[in-house]
Length: 124
Image (cartoon, rainbow, N blue to C red; front, side, top):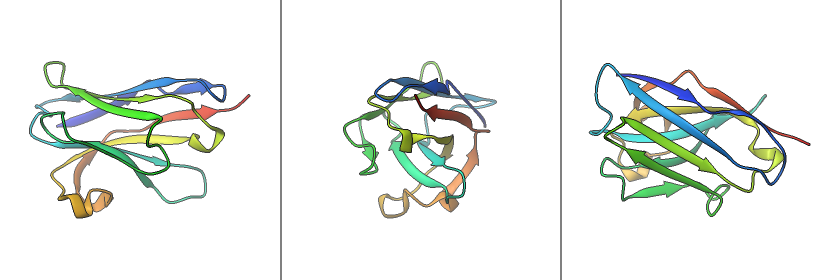
């Protein structure tokens, strides 16, 4: 299953963006989908995850209350709605597919495949 991330762009602080992660060549419904991000000079960090059914979600402390992850299995797509964006949210955002246990959900090594990344820049 190939993943395609899209929706990034340039936005002012306090603004919003919605990222999409669409699967092709197979269904995403049987997988947990996570979003990670990597800022220049920094390690990749986990941002949020949604379990297969869509009702169970997890967030890093840095985005909790501002970002919302959701999925539409009929469209084979996972979304990341990002509100109240801050300059420190600037990064390349990647989606990833896997079946990680909760204790390792933030471990990128537990995922089977990744999207190509989409750039998010928060700046005035």
